[in-house]
Length: 458
Image (cartoon, rainbow, N blue to C red; front, side):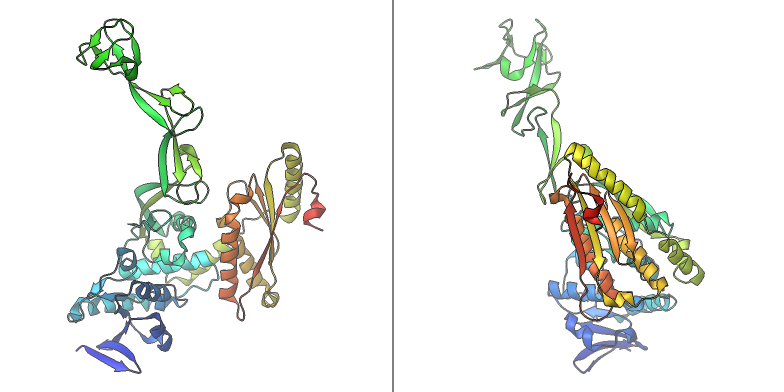
């Protein structure tokens, strides 16, 4: 029998020992013992309130809380980009429509254990796999104009900022590489080389001056005299006439044909057969050649048997953590200094652009960590830094709280990734320590021809 109980300003739907909290504002969650609930019903039409509630629950540190079913009262319609992170709409008058689902999800959740790891990426992977398992679902991309890649994924997308979509795709690809999920291709996306955005405007341009003020003209081939020229050269007041033999052209296919097209540029008057294609990023205004665009695969992810096993098998979970701990991905400091010295010589010879960055943590709590935790933290920090590195970038770790990063062929306007590194490292430290917010110090230096190693390692 369904009962709606109201106690201490909270509303709960109770049925056969299972309870759902009806919530209209995120602050209502602060006054509840969420671990004793079996799900939530969002009872609000305010979009921002609904979004805050979903994010707070789905990104909760407690694995079993973030997996709890979330329903939306069908009296209030919400956009698809919010609904996809929930278990759908419910009619409160038809309890059989949702309590059977609540029981199924609850029975699956209780068998899942939280992995003992501080690795952000592996924890997100574990939660995502658990979400798919408890819903017996497939992770399907949903078209979303507000996403920088044009797609949003249920559940996992909530763990990333809108500008971190590439990191999200890298984590999904790692899950696929580790055989936790299978992949079915649905689409390809093309992203800006500078900001990874997909809001692109494709234009044809002149190959000589790169101007976009170009006009296409049909080429005309006059059968009688074999003259070939742009259609504009044949135009007369009342039709077409050949400029070579002065005969009128009346019937296409009999008097003439149009074998091809030619372009003319209104900027430099250049005429050409094939226009260059360019893609202007409307987010950062970077002009991309088509071959410079970053291509990514978008598809559906289904949990594998190995993916299910890691939710329950402790030995497999420990193996995952060991595999993750091996992925420091850094160059030894002594070798890094040799490479940096070569880069200084290259800058001196070419007057090129490169940057050196030193990343330090000055948190006293970190000094108190044991060696195993320090080692694990070093690898997690390196993993975050590495996720924002580009092909030629080089990372080195001096110790657990000091890292060096060299960015060859990088200009000042291409240093946005350092801001993202700063944000995510600060979040990692604050999530794993107590007290006031801990700041990450990143010192940036443009490599100059007059630099020496002492400039960076005094």
